[in-house]
Image (tube, rainbow, N blue to C red):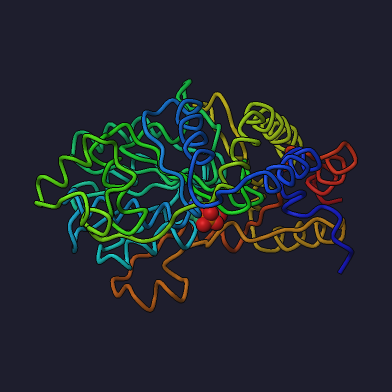
Length: 393
Ligand SMILES: Cc1ncc(COP(=O)(O)O)c(C=O)c1O
């Protein structure tokens, strides 16, 4: 195999050298490293940038998903045994919390045009499910406005896993703002890196307060003062015992000040990162559009596409193998388009007995792959990628 020249992840942080220098200085000067001021500032500024009221910073996108589902169960907004729809084409730790916490996962197939769940797919299951944990896959979405409408009409708890889509917009609204709550990942290679890190956003104050407890041990220490008092009075707990009073089921998914500091250092680059990812995506689409061996994705409803990685989907398996080889020979690192039909993954078969198949997700798995989209790609790298995307000779 040729040497890998274009890796999925190019650097640990955007503007790496300057960020590392700032980080070294921060580490030398700081005396407190557990969650504190840096994390709080990152939460406030991230919520403001995204346009939501509340943000809860955690150790990863996966822990954000787990804590969110636990928080909703604690509040009784979802109940053990409820059926919850999720995107079949997603990451393992989007659906795993549903299984771990006693919900019944109902896979929703994706559309071949958007790689995302369509309103028609939601309609098919809408009478049977109590919640939807939708993944906005690879920076894209289907008609999420319509999906939100269906959820409102049918009283379905609507959640977005936005770990792959920070900065994308549908009709001027950022993905992650269509639902009751949304999650983000700041793992290296995602839109913004805090090394490891995740966020939950919501406008719902009751859910926010519960998430603050569910994130850390189930205690009240991070609650707003008034809510703290309310909890202590409700449970008859005095100030002394409140130190170790635990109100509901929880985890320890507390980030460190190093992660918070990195979030604050990376946040000012948000617009630049999104702009560059979108520019690269437009270039790849321009080349792919001329190649009739490939399916062309189409997003007329999206005004910003903050692409996570570029998916190449060939019309048959032979063509897919050809373009995989072409990419590998050009030194491009490629990966499967997430988990394919997740119902075929070993963990899903082990824990979920009901069989549903998702033919589109399956087709994408066998006929597709992706390569990384990176805001720091140079001209030479873009040329290699465009050549590899051109129709076979
Ligand atoms: C859709 C989706 N959800 C959740 C995650 C998990 O995020 P993390 O790696 O921060 O745990 C990922 C990771 O790539 C993802 O793509």
